[in-house]
Length: 296
Image 1 (cartoon, rainbow, N blue to C red):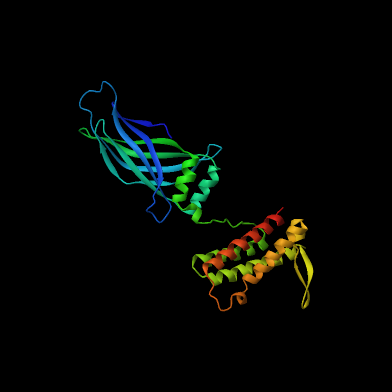
Image 2: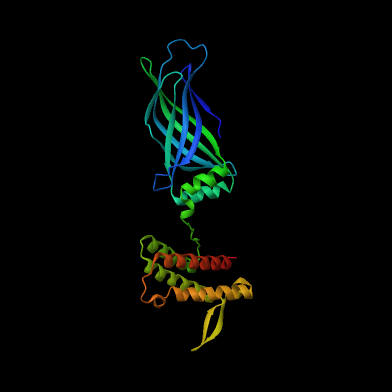
């Protein structure tokens, strides 16, 4: 949904740009958007003959998204499939352009969209040449604004971009050095995950949970529990969360995850991707919960 834009070229010619469609490129292994525009060469009434062709070159198209405050944020530069085209008077064509994205970029678009329609703009610069003798070249620019309905984006485009197939978690960046150590271990686990070193993922997760437990105890959130060897001091999740029942549940999860990421728990078995997934997601949730509570 968009209002066409007309760009005067010389006295009698106009280039009319109209938004047609936005769609996913289903044949790309990366998230890739395709945007199609209609480009038409119109002539004003009473123009003398002849009216010359217009050549368009050097197109540069920046795609931006508008947030709720009306501020535009740069997404990327669209790449047209044609770098040169020639339009006769009354002629038209479809200009196809593509934009490569990544899942981080898509997540930022989703944040700015805030579950509403997407408001986009295409800031375009190009060189127009009236092919008279001698030719007249002139730099031109325009902005085309368009709205993508929420239903189209959520039901058609995002699924085809496989956005939900990839889980993105932003690791909190906090100034406290104790938190930094915990986060660094978790970042190390993500790095090993991306390299396919799933056993090392569990090793880094174990370091992260050790650092978390130490941090909780150093902040005074600890209690003494009995075991077969006597007693030991462990994190007091009930005190941290201010809820006895919830704290006991989280404490059990914390204890069991410590056991899960301990090498001996997987003796005789190769650590696989599913093990790494489970470790990363669960331990991230524990760390994120604790950090948010400690930051209050």
